[in-house]
Image 1 (tube, rainbow, N blue to C red):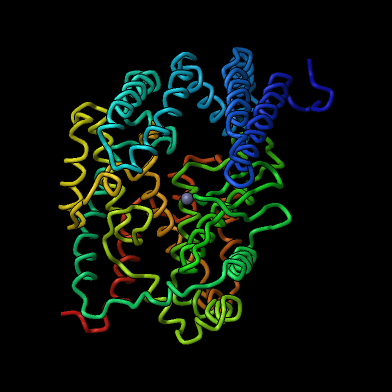
Image 2: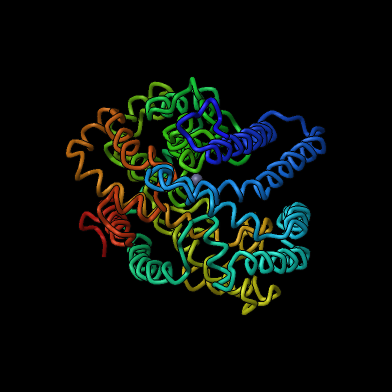
Length: 513
Ligand code: ZN
């Protein structure tokens, strides 16, 4: 029977879309509650919030694994007219993928993982506070055992690690990443050494100028607005860890965090999250409400957008030519004794640090590769949990030439593994690789890009991203999306060239010995 509201759409597909829309609506309620938890909720509300989120998660899971959904997908796949339409065919391909992944996991395993990871996260917080790896080790072992089981169900005979990676980066495999990461690592090591040995490192004092938080808030909002973030369809608030929550059509929430003793960190976080937010606002969410075509292509794709704005725009000389007078006007005269070149050089300092989230654009990728190698060894069992701190410290010594003083600043620094997020870290470096490739394509397509940035005109850049990335949603797998946008397959050379030019520009000038 045909739905009277969709007379030209086969009944099975119409019912499928209606069900997807209901699932998306439930998920958007979870998103709104999750945003509230991080920004507004009083701490005494935590128990109720956990129950609300668990109840919604169960409703979503039940609907996403409902047999009827599977029947509707199969029936829709059999309609030739649907398969002939490119957008609908892409939608069906992705709905099938999501459904297959969801039903492969036994409900009991999903529930056990949820319960275990929420306790494991608490154990990780306490262990990190006391730098006590031994207290976290049994939890990590438990999470790994369950994650291994999960990977086996999802892999269906394939590589377990790839099955986990596939969740964040559909189609990507460890075998594809290895040579890419290998090339990058080979080029980054001498680059980082060159910066470390330079006799004229940037003076970072300008980034540490104290600015009242109210002024920082005004400046960050001004920048996000200028980037093109639509405040009629979004907000910028404060949270402990900055994030972007795309709640649904017309509602995208960003957060950042402010420090009294410096203004630059908040700006980086805001530009990063606003990059995510612009992608969310550019997805065709109204037209394809609740459907895969309304969502992002992958985690790496999302990260390419945030890093492009944070780094390739926000750390460029052209951007600071425009932004510096605005920074002085809004943040205050304390900045006036510096200049745009000073900020440009300071914000491009390359210096290895123990902490991933504090590291520079170049070194950051070495942090990811370390985690990529160690998490695969942990998952396969080649690296026993008890040996993790020693393996971590050894790798930091080798790659970053630093000594790890305690596990809090070593293998306990990130929350991901406590949550069972194995296969997630590589998407950060994929984001950097894709961002550099996009930038290279964009500068060819927009010959005046640099002068536009120097004039604070971001509309052409955003327009290019909207046209080539945002509007497609999940129509193509991420690699294909970026191949279409840039004319190139996924490669490391654009990022290597970009970072090499940066280091030469900031540290070079004939002064290196
Ligand atoms: Zn991000």
